Length: 369
Ligand SMILES: *Cc1c(COP(=O)(O)O)cnc(C)c1O
Image (cartoon, rainbow, N blue to C red):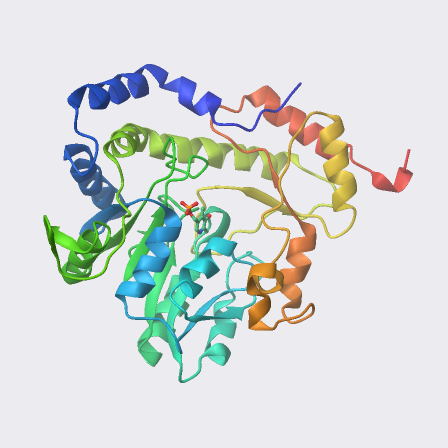
């Protein structure tokens, strides 16, 4: 059995509807900033539970434009988890701000108990990354933000529709950032992203910034960028959004199967923080020993797996200028050496799930057959 782990299955479930929508938009002759974008923004804001949504070209744009519009740049510090995806950190540094890394806890998200120690007179914001589909401890993060008067930006790129204590992530901080990269929960068919906020003035700034700083044609109130969500992606996202809850439930059920079925003493299954739920963007196990052997074992059985992420940002060549070295963030470094994402995709059959479980359970590298 070959485990595909691609997006074909998900597409094929509603292929006719996507094709109809795409043709409708192609036929309309209107491709940028039209009714599909406006309707998607309304529908996404409603789904998340925010007042405003502004469609953008990518998740990275959502992040860096957020910090730009919050006025956070050179000489400012932003707190972020040390096991973040590199794009989270780039969202901070594109504006010249400095990332200050805080180690994750056993839930693979920022350890909120360690944030206070990292706050300095230069700290302006916390970037809360809801990694792998699980929400951070937003109660502790918001308490600290209020105590120290910090902005909070939530990176919900991997968390489309999951909650912290019953409230949807993206609605806690000043701004919630989303990526609609094809593999994300509500994935587009190309690059796309958005922000959500309850702040009218901020939403207005985002609308102008994404369109060369213009609210009125050829009148530019500031230097902006081109970061528009296009009509085709917005229209296709509107179709996908109708099925998002179902897709999240489907992945939850796969995770449940994995949780119940996987039983191998070499493998630590993912833990969910009390108060959080997960949309299971990834099912990430920890394999403290023999990860390479497990990857090989899976490959031999035609099962793909991925490492999210093999190099923590502080050791990335891109961030050599920050001057960190191996050993500076030992938990993130350990996680980079032991995490492994198992196949998890919408349309995964029950037989495929059983196959992955049994191949994992029979893994025994000690034998070195
Ligand atoms: C995917 C992702 C991003 C970047 O989104 P793009 O749309 O690819 O620019 C940022 N942060 C996290 C956590 C992501 O998973």
